[in-house]
Image (cartoon, rainbow, N blue to C red; front, side, top):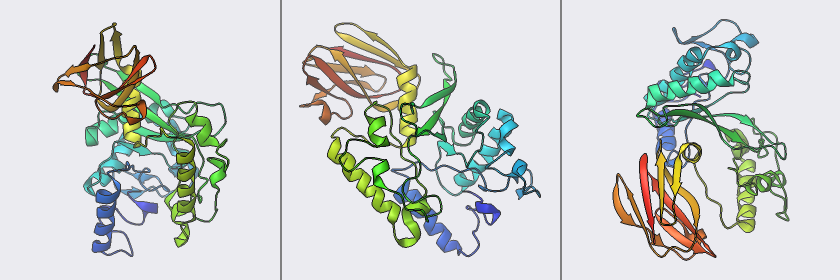
Length: 341
């Protein structure tokens, strides 16, 4: 939160913290956490709406001037984009990289179209983000899809492709709550016998299974109750599945944009893929048993390495399983040709 509860600025000072403590904390996030996690602003204050012309909160603590509630519901895409950009600029000045944002509470819940466009424009403006994403909704009901949603797709096939991706969580905070006072349970994620739970439902549908938590609940006032639950959930998932692949939200957003927006031409001896965005680990199968696969794109020409089975796949490798060939390739933007022999 760039301006937490309007008490101090993350890129300047936080009351009760020395400059050294603040800088060390930011360094920890920047160097230790950011390689494996995405960093988002959860708007500006997570409480009062801030007047971005003055940097001061509006003098009304009513729902119409709280970030979590009504203020955002009737704003235009430009107004929301300017507000999001203000938050992004603070984190940028603090040395953090962002490709998206998280909404506090009900921010934009009834204004999704403008929220998606505002995120798109803000992230592109501040960070030059190619595929902006945002985390707004959580869906825990069985049977409902949590597949990422694409908004405002344009420019596919030209030099300025655009879209924003709505990343959806599939669990509630069943770790330790937003305040670190409500212990949760691993069983809601995946049961002890490994047969049920929300994570199992979603993984078995081949959709991204994204757990939701809050850091206070993970830390749980030093008892680390939520962290213990997370470790148990992970242990159970590893017992049940041998094909899980952990990704950051930005990687999921980029992968899903390529999955939905790329074009494919198949023949018996080749696959031609055109994609408006780049992505890593793009995985698919083709009929038949390939002996050799040659990849050509703007990065050059190379042969894919064969591995023993699909579970051993990694970038630019292929595997045979029965009468199918599975491929995993890093796709740059533009055209990739795969010649199959």
